Length: 217
Image (tube, rainbow, N blue to C red; front, side, top):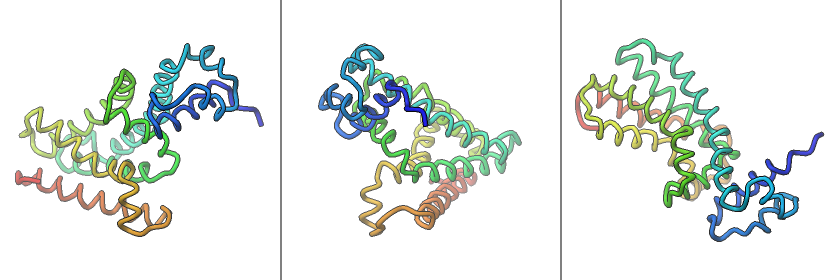
């Protein structure tokens, strides 16, 4: 088996440590030791810690954007192109089900910790993340919700509702500790992941039904 490149090992180690502790609390020596490379490799590949941090953001975009595009493509097959409320309704549920499934996967955890820190205290890395995949999924969700609502939503309300709806899936990653404590689950297996997905879809369905009928959700 070929050894992974030092550059990739540094990025993976840095994502984990930056996500857990924040950029200011993490030293380059600790990252290099975790990656099993010389500390000088950080300067060689990235120019320093700040460059490595931005490289982490770009790597996260590469990892997540592919998943996002697959979810959106699946949504397209479930009605995005049909141009009617029913098609948009089905597409939103396809997106939410896909996101709920992805958010329960353990390999997402280090990426999510990094992204959550950027949400709470944005740096130039946030622009990389937002433009890399967040804008795409927000724009798609906004277009679908507007169709479900029959074109009645103003732009600001549409954006807020899109984020609120997507949060139905994201909370199960960012609120993982509360989920485990409240449910007394010891781990997340297929039954637990399906329970989360079912809850996300049920809540999303209620919100979409309210939008379609013109009532508050």
